[in-house]
Image (cartoon, rainbow, N blue to C red; front, side):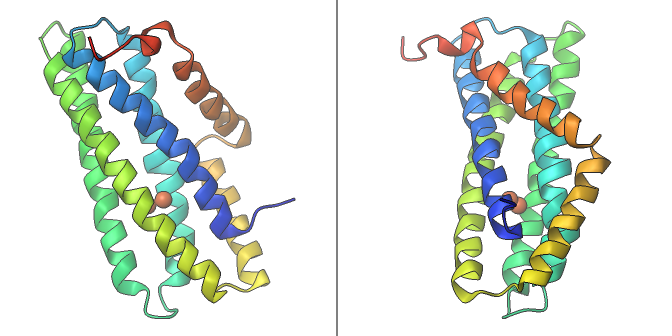
Length: 190
Ligand SMILES: [Fe+2]
Ligand SMILES: [Fe+2]
């Protein structure tokens, strides 16, 4: 069964929040001076930029929000979500910059830990607010069948912009890969 356009975004939120939890754990461990392979943090920051910022926020910005903008006075809410997306992108950019300087031999662990934490907080608050908004839209039945299928068509285009279906599946597998890494199982309350 194909999910409707709203449920599709809510399903993304489950994946996005798994990334948020990885970011939080990674941050806690860095603050605890645990060693984490920088390659894994680079995978995490790539997923934040490609999966969250480009694909998921892209689906919202290019398809879903423009469709909802004229309906039921949703525009104010949408405007706030768009501002939050920009905040997320700024944090992600600072994370990438501090990873680059870490790789250049500068001690940027604290900065990396700080931005990972900031991102995890941002994403959990942001998706929680959007989920309430999506629930309201579902309750009101604001989208017609036809609009749903049009939006699903737009989402396919967004998928192709990040490399297509196979690439998206690969990114989802990478979330699972990070969740299974040894370092993530370390206790942070020591
Ligand atoms: Fe969003
Ligand atoms: Fe979202």
